[in-house]
Figure (cartoon, rainbow, N blue to C red):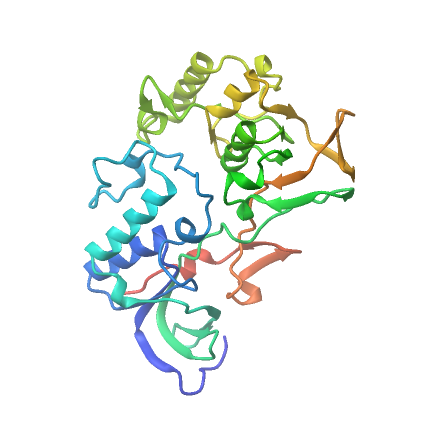
Length: 345
């Protein structure tokens, strides 16, 4: 425990919410509704979190609006089943305005340190040096920001970016593009490259289950419900995959070596579609970089102008003390998140 800071602002009867994205706004509305005093801060210059500053302009949600929306504040009826990034941001702004959350949000307010002190309280230090003491702290800062890059052998003479830095298809246009990673962002970008790039190659360290976004006109996430037994969910998903795409081998992909839902699913119809049109070429893991060339573990080599690393993010809470994180290099995982997120009565 650290000693009490000298002359902190007395907010010890309040909770502090860090982050004004989807979760942060939902927590704020719940606390306000429960008449629990709170402060709300965000390091950005506006609300919306990743939907404000983090996604590419052509992004759409992979979950349906039905399972994404706040149940007590439905999305507009004219929204499609899979709203765009712009529609999600407008929805979050509407949510904040409807519940009058905005006046309590301090923007451009970065947190530098959150530390436990005695009396079961938390000292929060902001980037401007201000300190406040809170009864509890709720971490809603998200994880789509601490970029994870693969460790390459060799050097590349072209450009390497992370999917976080991808914003518009213009960066792909007319280029020979390699996308590394089979998650939802990677497959979206590979499909974009399939439309506008000279060449689109998707490198997968291991094959993934491509789940259709909709089946028989209904979003898949609306068909596979939480109350269903897991074995039934898996069986239903396998059936929809087989009826929609068929076998992976028909696309030059090995069958995934894990059961569906053991890892985050990839909901994407376009990658199989563009593979069949010859607009996307699947490749295995990268072996090494060699100037303008990339060599893959199967021994094949291809020339590229741009590599997009859709290789995920580290779970990082840089404002927590070292003993509340387990870190190895840049990779961080929180060991005490549950206790930090408890709101005490």
